[in-house]
Image (cartoon, rainbow, N blue to C red; front, top):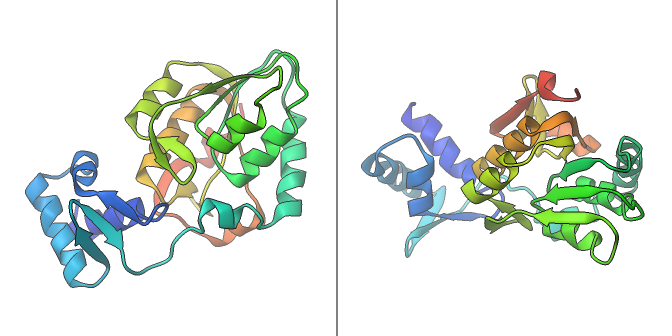
Length: 223
């Protein structure tokens, strides 16, 4: 992998939260610690990031709006998507619901199910089902933008086979679905692998954005 490609991966890993621990980057990237540190230095000298006590912080470039900002965007459209997706769920199903504001709209339409099991990495999705008859299993992991990610989350999801998975994305490009976070990319990929059928819930803004990390091709969706 070229240095420029690694540096773009470093920048993309910070798009969701704006920062990342240097040690996490070293574990995540397929390069030696010395190489990763050289890339970090190059980005800092270019003014793209700043370093502070073991973490690096994004200084410039586009960022995905924070969760509480995205929550009110395209609200009516997300509600319609959530209603349409809920029609695909049957009592007795075990499903995965990904983190995101559009998948949260799906969860809001499933509260009245009596025989439904939901696996999720989303704290808001899990809270929607609190006090209902829906069985909810929340994975572990590192908190990033109101979702749980990293290897712990991937292992938890990999241990379960489900009927359907409903995933979100940061953007769409010709090859498939993308996200700005390497951590979330791995979790979303495993969600699709663990499901017999997979569906992407995308509002119109996603077709005008192209994330760096491809996690699924269009052929990976549905059954």
